[in-house]
Length: 248
Image 1 (cartoon, rainbow, N blue to C red):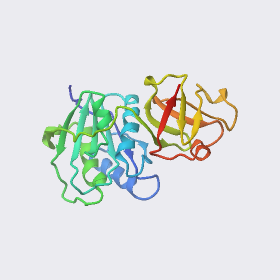
Image 2: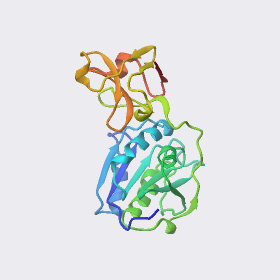
Image 3: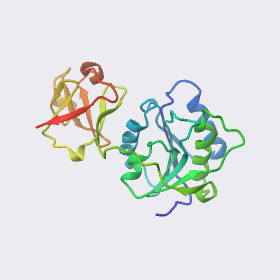
């Protein structure tokens, strides 16, 4: 594995929400340390305080970004606690954030190296490592600083999680329900069972009647449930963490 001399983009993945000061403060910290590096806010509503569900979602989104991207990821309910701050390099992409399982699936599916971040700023809030610790590290990597000057090699804390998660991991703006199941491992003819509902497959929205639920493989490769011109989360009464399974 080789480290790029310069990162092309910083991508944020957080559960901060789009309102309030947190994302803006973190982006300001990025700008102070890497003013010429573009920043893309990939997700501001990752599963709230839920590194496990977020891990499956993050892993599915990674392939859309070229090597040379650094992911600044903060879903960190244990901020200031025992979990270590880490940076992970995997096939030319960097991930910076807490070692709480958030990077488990992205790292498990690809070769990787990990460092515990030992660098500390002059000011380190116990409750906002996204701004004070993770953002400066992500920015320093983005402008070409090597991780050897910022931390020491380590191994990620292993998580006893399955390779594919038969649960809801995300509900999007439209009410579509994403699962932690990769579509490549699912028979496209199977029915999906969730919350007492049996859901048939379809490839596109126009293949089902308005108000009708169906499941499909979404644009990032995950099994997703939608209702044509409706909200699947409301129609099916499901939320993050609900179990889903298949029947032949």
